[in-house]
Length: 397
Image (tube, rainbow, N blue to C red):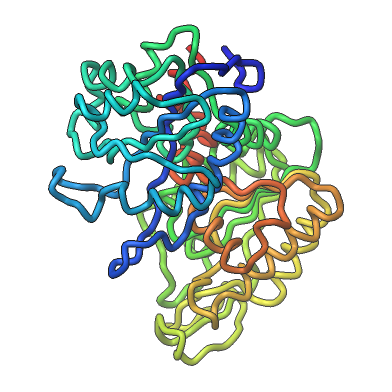
């Protein structure tokens, strides 16, 4: 497999898949969060500095047809120019003669952006003929869109076939893969995983996969109450998946068998309504009264988690400890985030993966104080679960 740092880009057009599926202001159509654009800058800068030109392709939202102009990538061209510091030409389409003619005159050091790939249903269908048309834009192919690597789409999994010796990952995907591999395959110990969020059902695979790798597994968020009920505790009106009580018991048995310290919060901040204005109190997590629901980890649980994290060498965080979107129930998630930062400052390697954890670390302005924040979302979860991602396999194979 070709490494981007070793490849000769001089005089070559690079077809580059990026994930510029960024949020836009509904009124002004301006970019409101450019994290994904900035994440691709290192790779684009490298190609340009090595004498190449870049043709960017991406999707934006879920358009039903090319007539859904609110999803046109023309809205992000100006902001992309601002981030990159160079002019960005806009193709007006992602296939077609006009776009091909513009490509033909693209000089080294120049950047062009194609129109939204999803204006064509062939993109999500993984259509080979469509991928072949896209392949005509480049002399080489770089995939730097980790957030779409779990999709077998034309621009992520099929187009690479047309560049058998000239395909590679960008620096963003390289960083994602190295970070996960460092956490899951390092000999350093202890390794602590915090798995939170609302439901056990959505995290079963990742929990089971982690069971033969981690030393500590901290369960947080709404999913903790399924474990509490499985152990015979009273959970009041807290979120519980009754169909997964036996699954929770099996996970606890597996943890004991594997010598994993499975930590379930011991206390909770409970409320009489799912509202930031609700009445609240702190109770033992096994003794939540009827009509009350657990919405955050309690004070002792936060202290326990901090102690575990400060003693860790490797940390994976996937999922919040409570309903952090409401200020009244954000304390547990903030405490875990701060403990991860403190552990990182002590020398631990910390990986934040999964949408809600990433949203939390960004909301608390701590992203630059941990080792790595994944841009992957669903792709990161599937990669952690050991699933082969089509966009990754297309480059490696």
